[in-house]
Image (tube, rainbow, N blue to C red; front, side, top):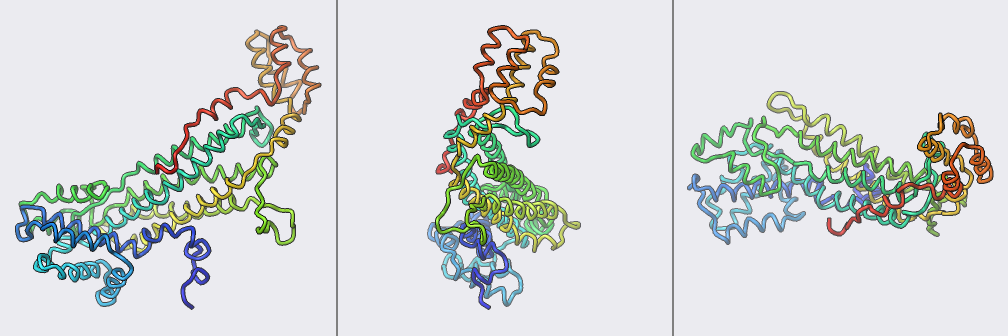
Length: 463
């Protein structure tokens, strides 16, 4: 059976393949090979620029252009050529080395210096840089822009609904009123903070040889300051330099990356569940799509499937990310190979996050507020003004105001008329009584409207 979206085992490449397509050039084996080639080429170019290594003279503009072209024109045919070498070598990084030697041999200036490809490197020098570059590209090119689209769309909705009053629910019970815009604003603020944390996580890498000591480097060229050269190459690629490692870069940075992404996911999952609840309460309707079916037996249904889909994928994402963060920083002595197969799944967690983000975006785009439903709930819950009444009574010096209001309101539903009767019975000044009499659940909002409107706009296009 040929591989297709119908026959793929994982829904990442099957059912959701169109949604995860932006990650394919980055986290696929093609992407890994491309980043390995990039790493090898940049190391070769750095060696050529080092005066302490005269055996590899400085490269002409034409030679550098040839090397750059190998990176920039890397395509599936090039990746297949590497795989052809691997069928002989049974070693994926060695196959990259042979591919590059073949390509360098095409240029007269480079053909005499082929043994400086992969010079003094262990496979992990190339792999750890490639994996860091994969994570960097996935974050900058795909995940952060998708996060920003969610934050931008939610910010617009928060601004639009800044003055839409609604009941809060604490412990599932009616509580002091807020606005829908303010509640959405809470999530924007949280998501943006976690997004920024994720963006700031450094991605360390190393180019220090078989056990992290530059052994072969120093044996071959003791005059070259190898840590400085490694730092220069890694920082030029936008990575952080890790000076202390074994054969492998210890993956602590990957763990931090995964944990930061998990924290963003948890906030988004919390949002999905809250919106699911608001839809259930009728606060939001969902714009029906004529061609879609909500239930195979109940024709009336418009299910919150996008938020449910997002929730499910966030759970899968965090399960994968948690395993990556737990497993990868642990390695026996200077090296064991148990991380190798796990690292091939870096894109799995990212893919489930992307599916979740796109599902949330679809869901937000279908939301329509039902102001009448919000107003009806508020009008049935005048008892929520008890908080305001007892607080004003405290200011006026009334003894035990909380206890008085508790006796009159706890567990009771009050309407406007019963609230007015209650106010007449309380020991309040005329000014306070008049102020409270004019207050309604719809107007008892504190600074909710202002807080929602002050939410800074987010330019998703800038990311």
